[in-house]
Image (tube, rainbow, N blue to C red):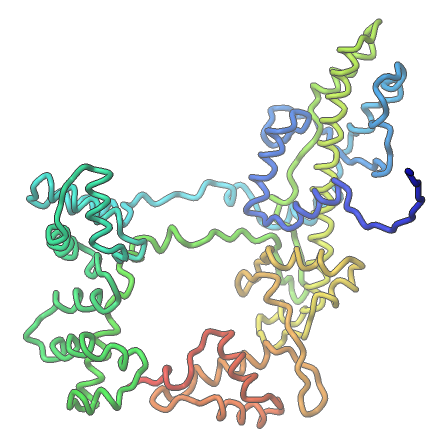
Length: 492
């Protein structure tokens, strides 16, 4: 028997508009332009004034109630479109609420010029050009091409010779022996940059050393160290090396300096510039005689509006004597696109407000740092501190902090870097752990490299300065700053 039950549930759901805003909020400035272009392509009712030839000042500043369901009614009703008003979407307003914020950031015509791109040969193109100049048979040339194509970006060959032989047989119908591939690999290893084609670090260093003067005793001993004592060398067990090779400290110092000159990743030499990620700051902070001025990057404020041609469509509809089914379907499609455009512009403007609100709170919280640039002036700050100040959720602040950058007089910083935990000193004062890290960095940078400071000694120094921190905490901070242990910092 069928039973009917009545249940009451409390659910938390996000509307499509909220989801769209969340996605836009976490998009950095460098990717926002791409996201806007995608929306422009998908929605013909959305228009970018900066790309159009129109000079009309109309912009969209919607104040539509998100709970308004006027545009979701059943299209079977004849009078459903009579209440539609295009003025809800189009308003004439030349004043931008945030114009003074992002028009002063120096994003002038000079900054908008295209960045020139350096034309240079890639790592693989350089090897191919060198291979073209070698007097090789057709078979050896194609084997050489296969080897070059199998190299990693750092210049190493990490594929087994047998696999390359199989690739030649199956993909190019070239029957080659492993010895032929091995011999051609030695030819590739003679190309520039030195060390290319090596199968591991040891072989890479040996290839580079073999190109140097073999009559130099330092070179000979360096080759001996790399060939037989590479593990001891990387662990900086210099005492063992001196005893095993019967060298003096001066000789060992010369050998170590010679090895350190070698390039462990020969393939990276031509790819350094192309691998660097472009960072476009979302905010600019300027110091005007002790007063900080926050501005938003103008790329975060695109000039979007509803297409004027869609207004003409509705004017045509209003003048139509008869409203048949096709006309209603066409108007319904237009209204859906208008809603979508309106929600997108809503989300963009809400994104601007949230960015400015969050960054303004961070700037005032860390005012001393932005004035001086000294990390020791950073106050302890967590996401909840900023969320409470601006009256927003912690997740919203997190989305802003994890992907946005601010440009200051002292460099460009990720907002996340301004958040840190608090440490209590002996006097009861709370300081940021970044202040402790800065002190550690200063002492390690000024230490005697022949006798580097151990973690125990660093702990004692901090305690002398009033920071009661355990040794394991010092080790954790040191690792977070990518500073090796004292033994690995030792120099001869």
